[in-house]
Amino acid sequence: MRHRLRVAGLLLSGQEQVTGNLTEIADRLIAAQDRVATLPPITSDAPEFSVADAYAVLAEIEGKRRAQGWRAIGRKIGFTNRTIWPRYGVYQPMWAHVWTDTVHFAESGKAKLELRPFVQPRIEPEVVFKLKAPVPVTDDPIEVLACAEWIAPGFEIVQSHFPDWKFTAPDCTAACGLHGALVVGEPVAMTAANRAVLAAALPTCKVTLSRGDQVIDRGIGANVLDSPALALAHLVRVLATLPQFPPLAAGEIVTTGTITDAWPVTTGETWSSDYGELGIDGLTLSFN
Image (cartoon, rainbow, N blue to C red; front, side, top):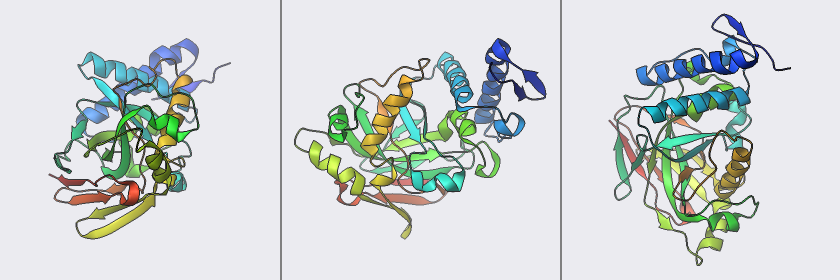
């Protein structure tokens, strides 16, 4: 028997839960996004709220956004970096769509972004792929990369609508995977000639995150589910369990999760990344 769920003082169950309170939660999260506001974690009122419930809420939110004219152009995968799981109390990855309204492309490796639309924003250096074919179910990174058109550096700006970045896995899954924006740097074409080299370099590459002239954090590609390429493979498996969402398709842009911790950002700062031996240029991002 399906659990009963308490939300906003109401005890709901069964079909009423699916059509009632999950829609109400979606509306509350959309309102928080649109008003650049915080709200209590969903699980603070509803400890039974699960990751499965969270994806049902995410589907509601995305349906409403599409009705407003938003167009999905890819995905973000979050919490793929196992080294930060204990810090946030989230011990599994999650994903959400990214949109034409939230994805920005840097020019010559430099970009500017307005922070005003985001709540408690943080920056994450990531590896981004554009797909030219669907990714098969595989644990072979070379097979995964054969489906990529290009690889690029990226900064995801994540945000928490939950105060002080305190939440559970269902909370942040429902809240669009904490996605705020994605800035994509200069792409490098994926070819038969460089595919094996990149597959080998992705787990071992050292990524440096700096604010101005100060190094803030460092990480390695293996932090991200052993390789950003394998994060893509993980997403394929997750999507196979979520029939309410489409599978990965050619043309999608996918950012695979932060290689360092996520760091708070404020107006006036300039951040940069370096990807070491991976062979892609870093990205410089200034905040207005």
